[in-house]
Length: 400
Image (tube, rainbow, N blue to C red; front, side):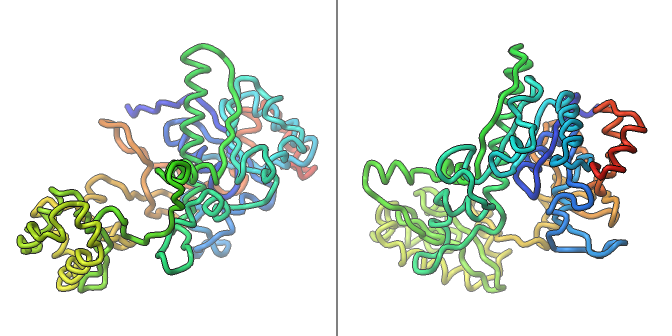
């Protein structure tokens, strides 16, 4: 039988787009039941973000297909007093609430998390946090990347900053928030406090937290860290080197043992004793020269040839994969990292598998992303305890 550590817990996903829904989804992948609250007739804006596949009723968001999976959809208008009362009834039967509205929104809707179920663990995700001079500003992932200091460090030194390829602070904040939620759940249940709590997670904070030594170096040394592209001032050789077939191969040869193995892979044992490269400090001082030598070597071969030579000599190496590469890679396939999810609108579609996994347990395939309001009647009856006539009245009043 599959172990589902959070089975029996119930999560209210009140979020939109990525951060809060992803946090809720992570808890769902560990066994919790996730109830997604969406605005009637409109739903989560993520449903309207591309890329799109052809669906029976028009374009269908593949973004939604991936990040909307593994939950039930309930339509409910929280700006309506009746909707607020239904929400309070749902919250009384839930363990975790995940939301990412601008601070103060839930209070305006009369569903302040601190006044709901005292056992509820509330995850509040925003760009700038729940207080402070910038807390009420609108924003998205790119603001978090910028204000968290990560954008300034990303890209080539002589070119403008470049945003990371995915909405990294949305996902990163969700990860931090899910970990914090697990901590409060443990305290509530395992330690028997019976009390929930409120988690303040914010996009710029997640970026700031992973800036390594950036703040410490500024504080103690006055150093303002800047973009260095794919290289590091203090470590070489290290870069994403272009191969003959137009791919990029990341090789890490800065440490002495790695450099020695790389020289042997290149057939350049002479470099091992070259005074310009004989120590890590010497290589750092001659960064351009040693990287130019590796660049010239890689350019003579296809990426798979370079990778195999490096593997044969135990050199740290990795080819920059695109989606086609990932879909065919033997490691990805062997571990089942991509699986088919049965989407109720467009049928089976290959997506990333849940991550991480419990050793010795079979991988559980998530349910497909629900249609808007697909589970409204079911959830309002089973969780909120509403009768069919009460549900009909809510629908008549456009509350659901």
